Length: 249
Ligand SMILES: C[S@@+](CC[C@H](N)C(=O)[O-])C[C@H]1O[C@@H](n2cnc3c(N)ncnc32)[C@H](O)[C@@H]1O
Image 1 (cartoon, rainbow, N blue to C red):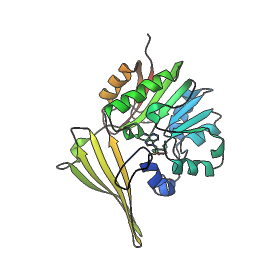
Image 2 (image 1 turned 135 degrees about the vertical axis):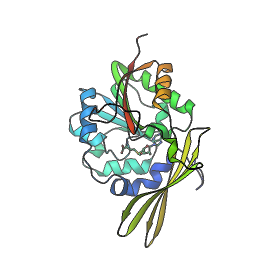
Image 3 (image 1 turned 90 degrees about the vertical axis):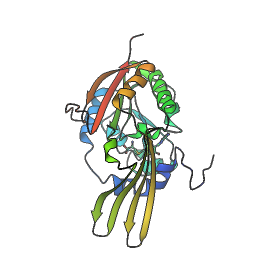
């Protein structure tokens, strides 16, 4: 299905942002703590990343010797992964990660950087968790990195935030909040002297409590929850790293 400019589908975010994702939004940083955390759980693998994108996490995991594969909806994001050293060697299935459209079972399945919230309905998020559960080995785990919703940041349903200011560039987030559907519509707007670009992001947020319930309905249970990849305690604010395992039948 091809979508018009105003329609938003699973590949929209990645297709619009791929050419600048690494340079503008994820300048080289050390994903070491995340990679350590995930490598420790993956053991000898295999591991599966939902929404692998440009390989920010998957590539360093592969370098550690973890057998990894990924799913993504955006050809443009995966093309960026393929350009990087080792990026051609990681198997990637093109599709919607809610379907978990791969064969086999995994010791580790993970979705980082709030991307579970890219599934825009409770049904799709719940379906994703059920599909993940079916793809875990008996001792396998599912790891989610996501923000803890903070709806007080919205003033009458909207927020404009200056994200970054550089000598030749300004990064803004322009957001609208729909509390009924737990949805946020965002445009990341980047102004330069030569013009501006907009990167749309749609998301449906959930609190950890709803995630735990969806997990329970999918046959999973929470094993650990941390405040960051270094295993700082979870405080209820900021973000959480949640580790789910299969619940005994
Ligand atoms: C914020 S990026 C994260 C990429 C990578 N995991 C990282 O941490 O850098 C989100 C990725 O999710 C993909 N994506 C969003 N919705 C998707 C869906 N429903 N199915 C598959 N991929 C999706 C996008 O194409 C994009 O590559």
